Image (tube, rainbow, N blue to C red; front, side, top):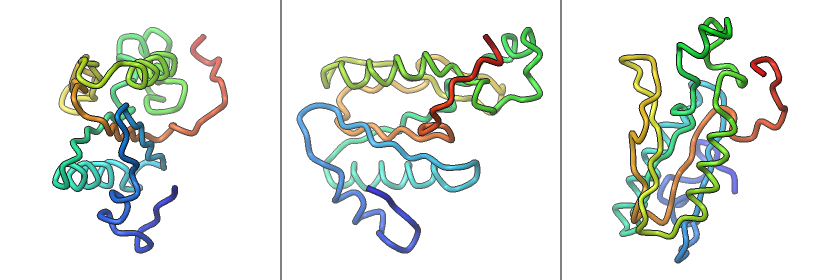
Length: 147
């Protein structure tokens, strides 16, 4: 399913999210400043208002810590694909999908005030819909720059 401004309203998009007993992961990908976070929050609110609790799980929480980037001489490139913990992100996506609804799954967030990720910034528990948003959700190339 794709969404473009003016084609579907957020309410119409919310109606297309399947109702399931297990978790449903919905991805929103796009470049910086495209409105991914805004759309994700509006969709979460629409789903929750209609009795389908949802949570936003952004990819930003998987930025590598500044100390790691500094040690790898990559701090100036923060935000590029290889400056994220892609393996941790994929592992936590699997955990979200495989963990039964009702069991807590911590998800890191990015704290812009300190410019670092924060572990367990949100905890997914009873929500059946998890809206995952980020720049590189569809990125396939393996990055060897950071080893």
